Image 1 (tube, rainbow, N blue to C red):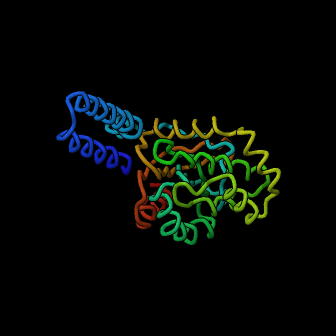
Image 2 (cartoon, helix red, strand yellow; image 1 turned 90 degrees about the horizontal axis):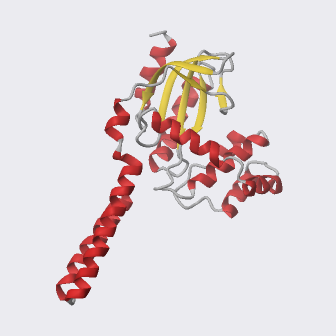
Length: 246
């Protein structure tokens, strides 16, 4: 949304300046404004232009979670899956304010399995993909959650230098971590995860799915979604109902 506002302000500035410009300059200014409008429309289409259709789509019958990092119960048949962007302000708010309550109530008590999937929004947070690649590199060293908990920070804070510093804090082998990042082995899988979230009707981050989890097939079924950073009570109602078999 910040980029939308910025484009609008620039458009106003161009039109204001046109009052004292020559005819040729005015024509050029008009072309510039039209270009800005086109860029704004394209961005809206990429991020939210298809939202009404996406929200109308039914959730899939099942969700394959093979290989997704998890914590909590290894045997529970109820799982909460988060599709998130490490630089999204709403994701950060959920991580700092709501996730601790979910952790204490459901994960630490082994009532559910909590799983994480990638959903970086390149148009809003172009550096976020770096954080998600870094998280996958942490999986290689068995340090996903150690690094994951250090990655929810404001946009623009995931430079290679800063990520290396966080990897060190997480107790990782930094040279191996940096080599993994440079190889860029995981971007395609991350973008597939993003595309899948959108295909389920996710129009923004974070996006959550709760359902019944089969530990043998890694399939999540009977899916219900929470499309946004809602208060803990929203998660509590849905998780409790799923645990009760409702």
